[in-house]
Image (cartoon, rainbow, N blue to C red; front, side, top):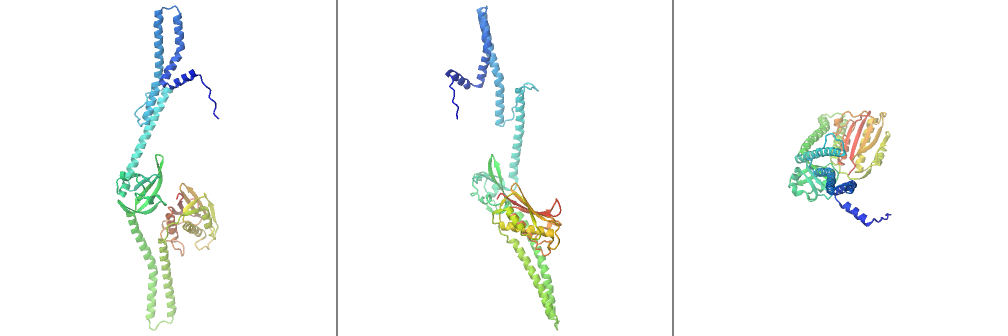
Amino acid sequence: MDRPRTAEPEGRSGAGRSLRRMTHDRRIVLLALMAGLPGVAVALALLWTGDYAPRLAALVTGFLVVLWLAAAFALRDRVVRPLQTLANMLAALREGDFSIRARIPEEGATDPLSLTYVELNALEEILREQRLGAVEATELLRKVLEEVDLAIFAFDEDERLRLVNRAGARLLGQPADRVIGRTASELRLTEGLEGITPRTIELTHPGGQGRFELRRNVVRQEGLPLQLLVLSDLSRALREEERQAWKRIVRVLSHEINNSLAPITSITGSLRSLLDREPRPDDLEQDLDSGLAVIRSRAEALGRFMAAYAKLARLPEPDLGPVKVEALVRRVAALETRIPVVVVGGPDVTLQADPDQLEQVLINLIRNATDATVGADGAGPSTGGVQVRWIQREARLHILIEDEGPGVSATANLFVPFYTTKPGGSGIGLVLCRQIAEGHGGSLELENRHDGRGASARLTLPTDL
């Protein structure tokens, strides 16, 4: 509730408003005059009531009035001039001019005005260094952006282009000043503002076409959020990787096919020689059955190998949906019956992921950890346990599957297709797991534990999809 205002006398309120409307320097003069008025009035009263000649009284009166006014204006200068100096320096700092410095009346002075000048000079020095550092950093960033061979674009909340470097303009086939302000749809870059990252996309522009690695992040410029797109041309690197991949494929296929064809060729040659004998051996039918069984076994093994290889190439794109991490981990851990899998737990997180693919990854990793703990054939005694926990760091979720087995001996070959140390293993489980993780914009790592015996599998997935 507002308090009632008390009415002021008209003369008093008018005088107060007049005083408030005065400038600061005039108020200083007025206050100085008012401060000296009693002394001057007493001196003049004594002067004119005393036994003095009128001429002398008038001369002394004039001298006192001049001295009174001079003292008032001198006081004004002593107060106003430092304030003007401070105002000029602050205005210069606001405009980015760091060449003006306040002159300290006396070195080592400790009066308030001198201390104010000292602090203002120190502030000017700090701002000058910060401004110089910011200018140098901005110039360095501009040079780096112009020289890197990555196409960089920054879009605002309306999906309008606000920043592009030389490589980006070259990719679009237009000068930078002609594309700034245009929308992502007009530039055919809408695909880059959606979906998971990092990933590979196909682009066709006047300045380049092919496969590009897309990375996206959020930055701020003058307080406004911008989506930063970084496109890296993968054509040359992919061609080299494709050539190396073909070499590896041919080497692996040749090795496996030869392993199957060599005994088939040998057995068919032996069987042919038996059929050509005259008279034929009495145990010919037994030899034929044995040889055909070997041929069939090797043909089936070769068929399983080719089916496993085709499985690697047919992995579908993830069908993203909400997945509660704790519920999924506990469900998968309950599938393992050889030893209890301890779910340590972690934060309550819901991911955007393909539940079937993510479940398959966890099944493989927990099975591998259990195999390492109890032995691949499940017959050996348990040497420890398996635990699953997860932690969240920034926009990444790390799922850790830790065992207490003998550890990993050949970490360099873990993700080589068809490499396995298990009897009867296919050698594609970890490769599939890593492909699924990378398809979700994450990663998979397997290493020996540093805090004890055993190995640790780390599945990293983004949480900001």
